[in-house]
Length: 147
Image 1 (cartoon, rainbow, N blue to C red):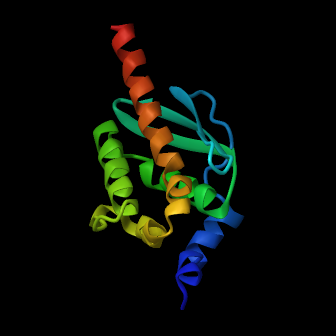
Image 2 (cartoon, one colour):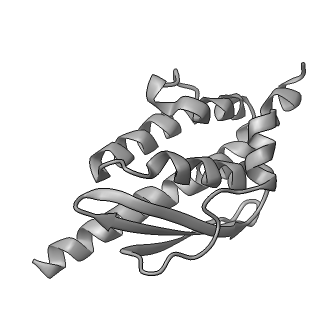
């Protein structure tokens, strides 16, 4: 099986064709836009954070199979995690995509590990996760302003 064949495994294609958690989320705690200018992938991420946990996560976006599948898989993985756990998961994912060993916590997200060998696709896979980190930073800033 070639590298590209392994990348587009059944689960990844399924997430691309039938994205989970696609759509806007109302109400939401934070809405964050992400853009990969090198290929044009776009993403809007909506998070509902309740009692320091990600109660709900949704996204809308346009882009390649890798960026959309990564967003779909990420939103599934986030639900129920504390904000600290969500940040840690994002860090683990980014480390794996940049060539590090995958953490057991990543679950099905490990299917995207092969992208680390396709440097042009790394930004596609990490777009949702970079957007997540920015969204969590924004939510934290809002919370601190409210105090």
